[in-house]
Amino acid sequence: MPEPFSVEVSRPTPHLVAVTPSGEADLAAVPALLAALTNAADEGAAHVLVDLDALTFFDASTLGLLVVADHRAAGDGSTFLVRCRSRSGRRLFAVTGLGRLLEPTTLPGPGLPPSASRAA
Image (cartoon, rainbow, N blue to C red; front, top):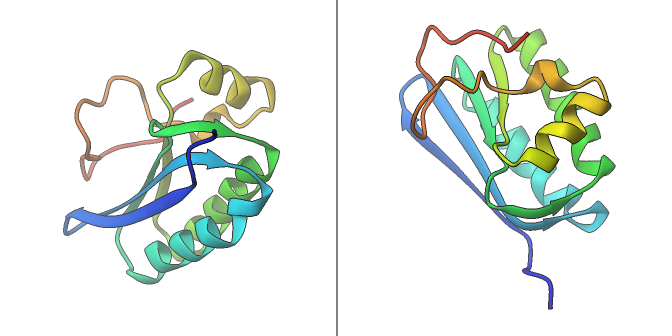
């Protein structure tokens, strides 16, 4: 049986809001993930990090939502990055041309340093 979708929003540092979905992120998960991303953006942090490492599955609806969130963050002047350390997930980002959203793989730990920049 698939793991149910859930999402947590936390503020590990004053400059960072982390959105951590878990389970399966498909079309049915979009409303909950959209609400979490909206809440994260509304907190006004300099950086928003979406950590996909706890997902067992995500599809194009999740990718589309991440693009929307990235555009909103750019309009708000904040940094938007995605953590996805699974090989298949990173490949999906690369194949779809969304690799620019991925956090640089050299960043350690759960947080994003204030000086972080986008992955190329």
